[in-house]
Image 1 (cartoon, rainbow over the protein chains, first blue to last red):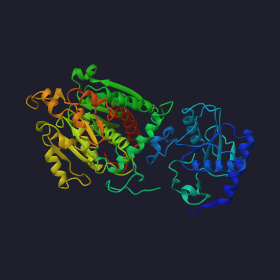
Image 2 (image 1 turned 135 degrees about the horizontal axis):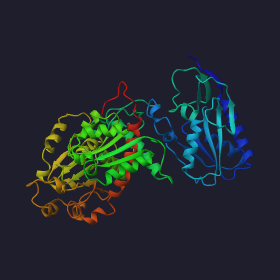
Image 3 (image 1 turned 90 degrees about the vertical axis):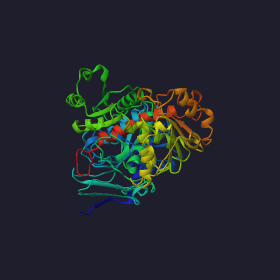
Image 4 (image 1 turned 90 degrees about the horizontal axis):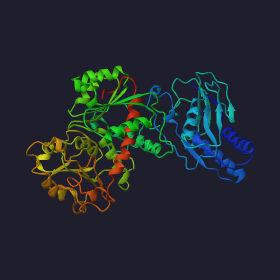
Length: 188
Length: 351
């Protein structure tokens, strides 16, 4: 079954630059701001947003990685044991404004897990959310503050985000594949 | 994602994506090297959780873990229960001295009763070798062996391996990093389930393993070592068996003392504890035969002044408290992996 491309590498790059401007505008600066990517593809996306902000603001924001494996509520449903990828938050979360970054926003369950996990590390002043793709079908009252592209989908479709750091190239595609994307978790 | 699972430690397997397929953990003899690597990596993550301000994640939220201990234990039982609570499991703790076992209830009946009461993961210690295997035959959930008789203590062997990799310089790299490192286990080998499980993991890791003690407490071990030298189990190298304490300790990277199990000593195995201490105690002079950066281990509980001198137990080389701390992380990893094991599916093995 062939996938349909919905974002090219250039479009991904422009979306990231726009999101980086939106973040700085909305926060009125970069004071107290930290970026945290959700493993796996949220992590390179968070780094790219930090790169873009550094380019136009001259400030390097701290970037962390969050693994939500232990916070999922579907341990027995995961067909293959999730390979744990590691949490690395080399900064204090207390009173920080956290910008969570993920590739795809779907049911919202991943983001709920991520917020549970974050709060175990400290008490952020605020948690915001940036995603490259919002594909709808929320099961929880969660919405993103910054969205690269809104993509109407059916539930059965699968959105695949490829980033050069992990997959060798930048691309977003949509397909009706029968196999789950190899993100190690259901896109949520 | 990498999928190649390599069978032997000769090939680094640290990045292989291995699925956990064991419903029970009764001993380490059926655990492959890539699976051991998976346990070690999962333990790394659990250590990360233990370093957080809130040492608790919801991974096993609502899962019911029961500890059933027919033998005295403090550290192992508390370690398992702490591990289960850190994963948000509900823990029921049964000490058989105050249970219906004293009224003559059989092991099988007890296990069936616990299952009917909702136990999903059963952590069990028993004085009879093989008892957890019997429990696993009748229990519908997962059985984790917390030590059976002289036979096996898989979580101890795994926490020992983890501690060695963590504390020996350069050993935490993926894939057979204990290869060629000399590990001397000294003491009551005969009665030791710790030694037996360690033989499996350490020979799988490629360590140069030495077992040392009085001849009466090494019975049967030389035959085991010879069988493996003949290639009986692929991937497991030979190990050395000796009563020469100096040969065992010379240039060792790891010196592990084992408890003299007074409650299991029948007449004639040891002339006296004093004589044992005089010939085999890990004291400062003997330990100085090991390499300067060598670590000293002991699974506890210690008979200080018998198998280990008090000053050695608390010296800068001692990693005994690391073993205890790592025990919680290793047991968290195993509870997590067992709970996530798929329901009976093709390719899954029963134990």
